[in-house]
Image 1 (tube, rainbow, N blue to C red):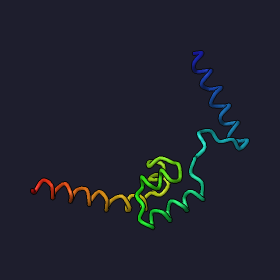
Image 2: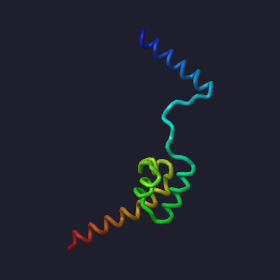
Image 3: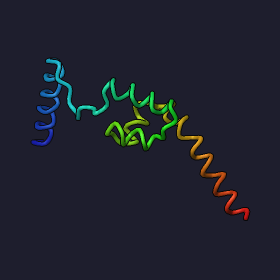
Image 4: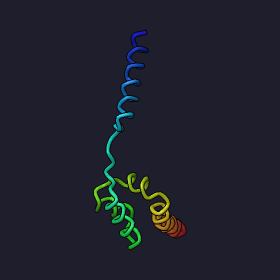
Length: 91
């Protein structure tokens, strides 16, 4: 009973805050400038790991914000690793 009242009051408070323009949650570390730099670096041939380290974000953050571009950039490297592993196994 008491938990229901607390939960209801919390939800009402959150709704009131949203009505005032407040949005909850952690602020994003990815800025438009960082996205531009990341796209340029990926197009220039850098790996996702290198780009993430350079602009100061995690690889997951890059994948989340760049989507298909970062995934397409990562796939050739995965293929290279697979072909190198196959070559070693074949010997």
